[in-house]
Image (cartoon, rainbow, N blue to C red; front, side, top):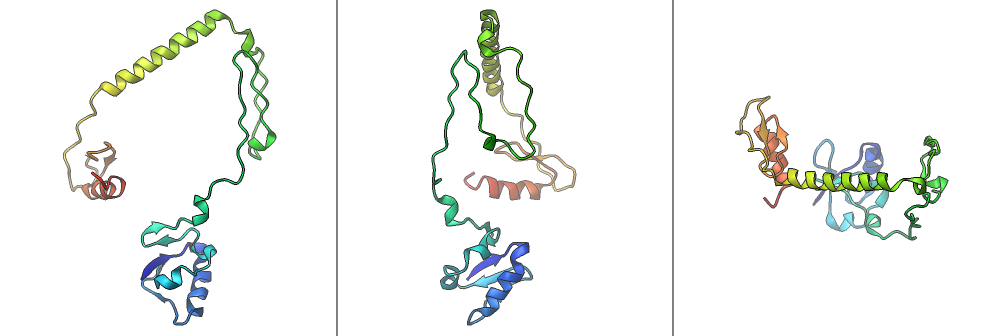
Length: 174
C-alpha cells in the first residue's frame, strides 16, 4: 500500500475521490490515505500535486520534461553598453534603476587595472579561507540549548536528536 498525505487544500477532493473507488480507499491516520499501487497509477494528477507520498514530496513526471523552447541568450560585448533586456524579464512590481551617467566604454585603463587586481586578491583570499581547517564539532548533548554540531557539514543544532535526524536526512551516505 502507498501512503498519501494530500495537500491541505486538496484533502476534500482527495477524500471524495477515495470514497468513489470500489472498494473504497481507506485512511491510515487522520491525514493519510492508503492507496493500492494499481490504483495509484490511475489517480488524477491534480490530486497528487503538493502531496506527500510515502514520506516524500510528490514529484510530477511533467516536472522532468525538458522545456519546450530554448531561452534567448543575450551576449555582452566588452567596452559596449549592455544589450537591452525585454520587459518580460522583470516582475510586475519591478522598479527600473536610473541610467548610469558614464558608459562602460569610458572607463579608464587605470580603473580596469585596479578592478583586475582586486579580483585577483579576492580569489587569493577565498583560497586561503578554504585551506583553514573547519572548527571541531562540539560534544554531543541531550539537553536543550546545548551546542551540537553535524560532523559532516558543521551545522549547529540545539539537541542531539535534531542533529541525528538531520544527519539521516541530509547525509544518508555518511
